[in-house]
Length: 105
Image 1 (cartoon, rainbow, N blue to C red):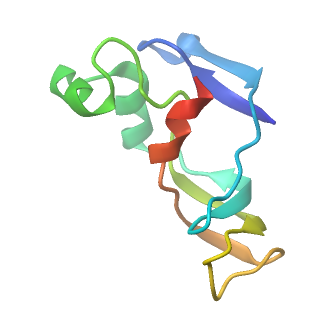
Image 2 (image 1 turned 90 degrees about the horizontal axis):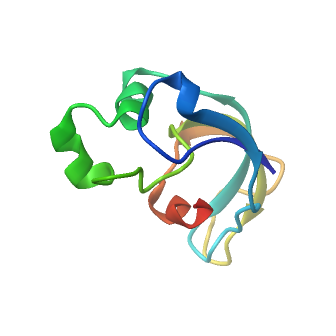
């Protein structure tokens, strides 16, 4: 799949459109095909690594998460075995948990 990826902190010039592995949904997760994503001040902080104290959580020398942002809206593509109340084809919006995204390095 295509994603905007960053390998270093900096201005918008560090962002690149690249092909990355398509994620999968674990037993408690939902995979969403994103149709719209938010781009608020939080994404700017993740991109620039500012303030420097934030790097204790987001990565000291380089971003832990290579794909920015977490506000999403889209269509459910897959659900984990333990997910109830949501099924493929449902339209959803919300905040994505980005903890697993570290694998997109």
